[in-house]
Image (cartoon, rainbow, N blue to C red; front, side, top):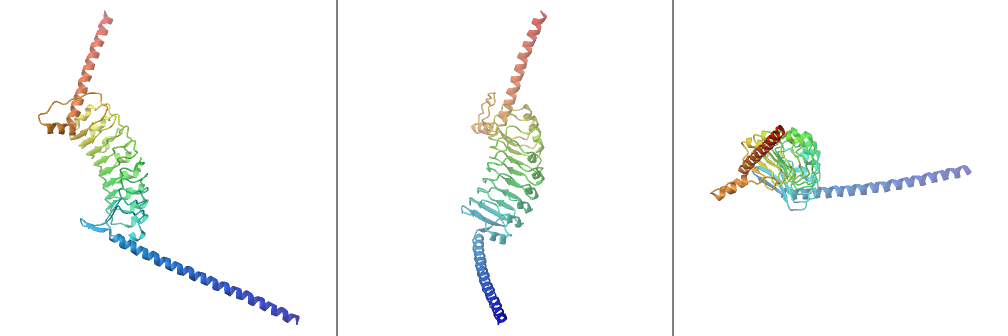
Length: 342
């Protein structure tokens, strides 16, 4: 009878254990079902949110000059929804004053993009995926908070126009950008550059450069490497002198040097025959030069505006002063020599 009792106890224990396992299994199944249901609800909610976001984005799409353009202005879009990837046919983004904090990494999927204009936002970083936009012609990210430019931007082989003005802390560019063989327009004004970067000097197609309101004290001696440059803005810097090699910039037609610390105008600049507009306003130039009066007040204004006549007059006055100083010095030396001989 004892053996039967033990056997009955073992069966009871096994049954109890089995019931516990069955109950636990049912509880786990219930939890899994609940999680699955919540996930399904979440997916449905996300899908619904994506559809709403996509519908909202489609309202911002216009056709302009034959291009499909996404235009968002003066609305709060601190981030762009992932639903945007369903609109890769877009050829242009114009997103201004939205408080946008970053460029989404999925931007690289928009291989039809020709213009990316994200000016006047709060963007701090340009993602490396930007390099996938091989058709991109214009990248406009002025008035943001960008501190560095990724080297991958050099893969945007079609880029013609790059604007990075007023990012405040930007002070350098990666050397790889010299590979942008089609870039002709570059705006780096109102940043922290202390010189014209070598990569800029090496850009083969560059025609227009604005580096006004930086902290440039000296121009590079090989500035003439920018042989296709026709417009150079350098206003509101700290430049004290100009290199003689500037006269080798044969295509330069506009040179703005107002509000610097220039102490002289090099005589070699007379040789710059294509220079039509030059501005030396508000520099501590030591010589006082007055242009001869002109009968036509409008022509007087033009002479002041274009500054070329002032430049020539200043250089001539500087030469006259040098000749006068040399003559006086010669007379003094002759007098000293005569006194020594006697």
